[in-house]
Length: 238
Image 1: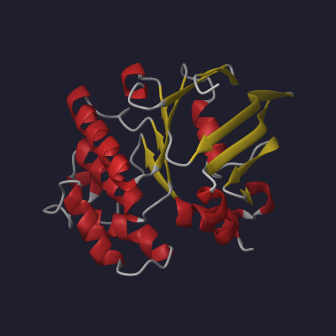
Image 2: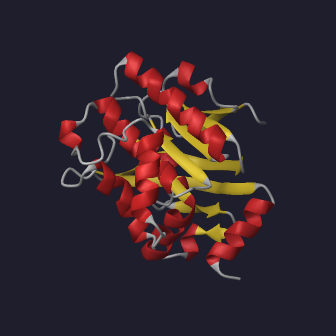
């Protein structure tokens, strides 16, 4: 069974993410700084999960490991039945292209590309058909049908995050990772983005993993996992 088929099989069995005893250490001076201490976590298809905790608690590090953007010092992550440690960097990238969408605090738009091109790029890299048509449709859905040819510097923060949402959902991901998606936005704009994010997520039936320090944003999710000093100290699914 190939990676894509094994992932689809596991998704049908309702498990999309599993983390087993994740440890993340980084070198600091003459010692190792441990950021995560033996994290265990399982996420079912269709869940909305908020990972909460103070700044520096390890939330974003955990998200990066779950998404395969970084590798753990020890332990492992499965997306479906695909064991990330069994894949090389290119394999993990292909898997993300097939299954995962991302929304970041800093938008992560390419400044030399227009809004349309930013949404098209991951579709083209994943060899999705009708990339331009799909990108146009999604930019229209997030209210930016009239801003297709604008560059990021010509867009407000809220508009840039709308482009990021269109890019994230355009590939029809099974799993969406959002890291402080309103962190660089004012309150009113942030609320608009939150409403759009959860509305699109419901429509698409995506599994949402949201990192936030905002308790009101976290309450929009069905499940909450609290991280403190690199450990899970609360999981209301347990």
